[in-house]
Every structure is written in C-alpha cells, then in structure tokens.
Length: 122
Image (tube, rainbow, N blue to C red; front, side, top):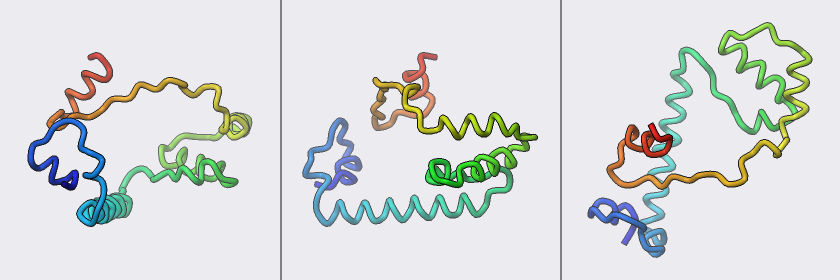
C-alpha cells in the first residue's frame, strides 16, 4: 500500500517500508514534485517585496553578489567592506554548527501552533 493511501485510510505512526516503493509511490512523487515546483515558481514570479536567495550562490564564488542582493532587497546599507570580507572569509566554518540537533517528528493532524508549542515550549 502506497504511503498516500496509508494516510488517507487514517493510519497513524510509521508507514511500512513497502509503502515507499512501486508505481503508485512513483506517481505520488511525480505529483508532489510537480506541485511543489509549480508552487515555488508562481511564488517567485509574484514576489513584490523581497527576493529569493539561492544557497548555491551563497556557497559559490559569487557569494558577495548574492549577499549584496539580499541586503539591497531589505534596504540595508551601506555595506561595510570589512564586514563583508569577514562574512565571506568565515562562511565555511563548521565549529558553530550544532552537533546534536533536536528533531521533531510531525504527527498527522498536528497543527502548526501545536507544533511550535511542543517544539519551543511556549
């Protein structure tokens, strides 16, 4: 049984591994991937204020240009060249990353407010 059918039938918990295989699962993936891409493209095309950041650009050789685009979109400036140099020089540091991240598993019918209350204790 495909995972989408598993959820529609009201199953709660972990779907079995076989739910993620086969032609029905492939159809779900194709549909969700297309729906997400369509949604993202329409959202990007209709942005009135703001911008879209591309992670690959922030990590690539044109990172300064991407950061300047962001700062321009939020009307932040002028840009201090020393701070820009510092930000770019330290963008690959890993010592500030959390080693043990807390993961929260979303449950069926858990609304976003309940999720944030559980995740952030408020």
